Image (cartoon, rainbow, N blue to C red; front, side, top):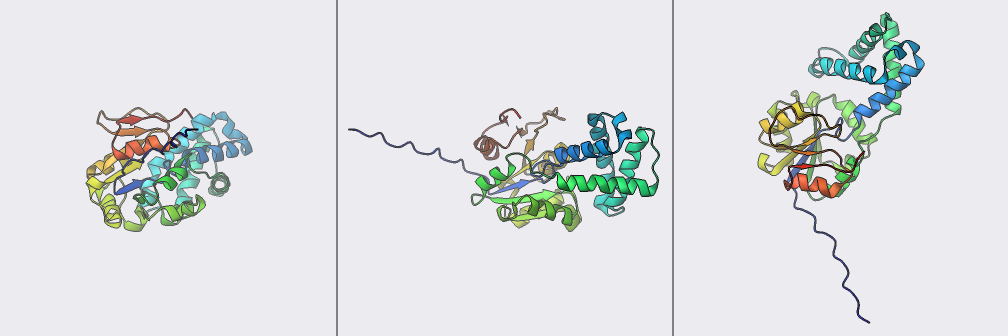
Length: 258
């Protein structure tokens, strides 16, 4: 009785020497965590029901983006801007909040946010697949304590060789200097490195300014802001397909429908 030779596993593609990842909305799911926390706040404070959840989330995200540079620069604390954010959201609903009420509301949101934290689907599995085959780094704009907490919460600290946080190094994406710091820690040249991130401005434009090839993580299928050749993926769940993007073997890859 003849036996067939066992099928050999598919060879894994060669990877760049270093792969850098953004944290928020690339590895840590800020967007959906934020949305769930806002849903809980909306259920508790009836005046917010004058806004749809989509509108509330969109406006909250807009205010966060507008205020974030001041937080990164250290000119204002995150608790202060978070309270002001909710004061402005309440004003859209015709509600005037005192400082104390805005602070109480922002703290309620923060508790919900911490309780509903999650990783981006497939991100941890991808890091596990890449670990030991390339240097893995995180380059992120935020406060050091906040990002260190996320690293521990997600259980990925053993998978990541280093993390560069804007607060810790005094420079933020898209400034090429923060990417050069990451390159130095990775012991890699720009041509040996790939940057994966969801922000076109911070991650794609920033990486290109440092000579690093970017991979745009576009899970929400946003329109491409500029007609430049950038590899795109929209899911991490098909890890072998993401490897193709990291290896530079495809211009645009989409994973299974979410």
